[in-house]
Amino acid sequence: MLERNPVLKVTDLSAGYGDIGVLFDVSLTAWEGSVTALFGSNGAGKTTLMSAITGLIRTSTGRIELNDADISDKSAHARSTAGVALVQENKRVFRKRTVHENLILGGYRLKRSERPTSLEAAYERFPILRDKSNAKAGSLSGGQQQMLAIAQALMPGPKVLLLDEPSAGLAPIIVNELLQSIVRMKAEGMAVVLVEQLVGKALSVADHVVALQHGRVVIDADAAEVDDEKLRAAYLGARDDSAV
Ligand code: ATP
Image (cartoon, rainbow, N blue to C red; front, side, top):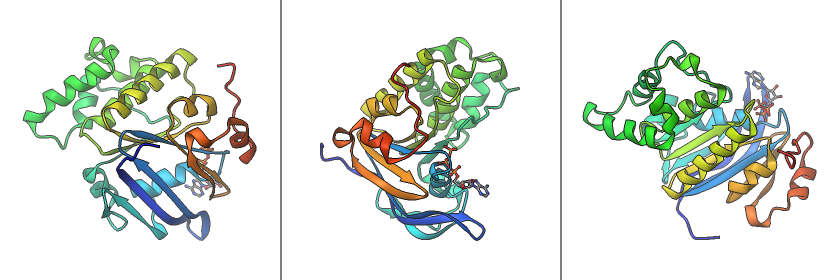
């Protein structure tokens, strides 16, 4: 694997809800210009890990570093400002706002003078959003709303993008379009953590693979070293997308 700079480094993280432990000593790294695919069956703890990284839930132990700075004790807002962005599964955009307004809201922290460049980048990334810039977000298709959610998260120029099941409920052609956009993000140097049930699709863009089972890491390897079947066998519930 090419030598790349680690952007997000999670070390020995444990977290849960109340007294219930969900994640146990989980470590994961996301590198500049690469995709770390995070796999695991339903309930393995993938979304919980995203929430812990973004500060939406508290962690009991462990360390989270962004570009070598410890952000473990920072609030969710401070982590976002530092450059951690999350697109939650089935995240809702502001349906009654236009596409343009949604993007402006995504980049609310930007200086007014910085907005046009970020907006232009969003429209270049997903040209359909430019065509629909004055349409209410609620009138967009599911795939277009997912593109808007991603574009919104990218508005402030994050350092790492966490994508929680971006393909959920979308048609295969849209899934392929989203994967292409992830490939482009890599080329731009973005560090991406991709949670995905479509194993084959995710592996096609992944550089590194982490798999969770019952909240513990069972695979942590370069994507090139991960055998598709071995990965499927490592946990139950992965969907076979070979026909997609
Ligand atoms: P999925 O693929 O279904 O989204 P996941 O790997 O993302 O699964 P999590 O959603 O992180 O898994 O759930 C891990 C465990 O934590 C599950 O047992 C789940 O029931 C539990 N859990 C998730 N959210 C909460 C919550 N808000 N309160 C209590 N328990 C929760």
